[in-house]
Image (tube, rainbow, N blue to C red):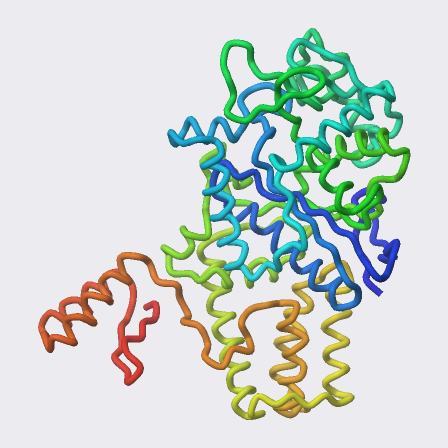
Length: 466
């Protein structure tokens, strides 16, 4: 039985899907105006663990949106659209910005072994259902018009505090979360459709019954989630920062439109933090997967680091912790490789191996307790009472969830090397081919100055960090 912590009830609950033959899950995806940082990506790793754990028991339809329009820089529904801002920053079209950063997002997503969603839903490709949803809310009396858009009147939805609690909503004053404009009726009201500025043409804008403009960020997720998954979703995921505004607004507009409960289980992941605070793009505290690679870490070392902390606890990032994660991953792979050799990569399921697999899955089914599942994995591969074939059987189950390349016959290199070290290695290989041993030695010393030891083997140059 899978148990999940439901943000709405503030407790762990048994997971009971509406239909066992098709679990539905919607995950808030990237706003593709810039690179995803590793704090963003921690959320997708936890969602991947959830996806894999559910798929071990049920079929799953997993939808993720791509926000390529409508996400303003301010919670007050003013300021620039992040896509237009990115276009201005780089001197490209908003469409080109969206295409480039979405492609880079999926590269990072794949590098971290996150399972691709069943359906990827881009906001710009779903304007029509968004307009229809706003029209429904208008017909039911939940909207009003201002000079800059169509707004949702939160005072007309009596469950607006369902996700965050009454104390949070009642404590909001104009200027506390947003600047209270003269036209907004309540501090919590939000834009469903924004009008294009009269003094300039936006790159992304559409005709609507209310005038030329673009959708609000919140309406996008509701329209796309319900288009693909129906009026009531089993699971909705995202970062903890989405609770107070984005997901609260999704509930309000969705349930007002349909009269049905929008989501049965709200699952949220905590922040990755630096010692100086939360990682953010606006604050300049911005580490990407490429930055990790340049510093000599493979992406899966970061996945291993994330597995070591429960998704509902904050995780403090440091390069010391990355060193430890990379070393632990290397050692776990070495044990797995040895087990593979000893077992001739043949799995034998026995009562003993089933017991260890059950122990592993019980940890994951207990609100995705990845740290415990990882500890079980270490215990199993070191267990003297299990044969190599039984351990190899256990590893099939562990790898299906952890996805750390534990079963590869040829293990990947320990490190994804920095660009400058790769260039030096290429020069050294050319020097050795030309039998220029002096140049080869000089380049080996230059590589050593970068913090890496290079060894010559029958398979070619092998490097490791000093």
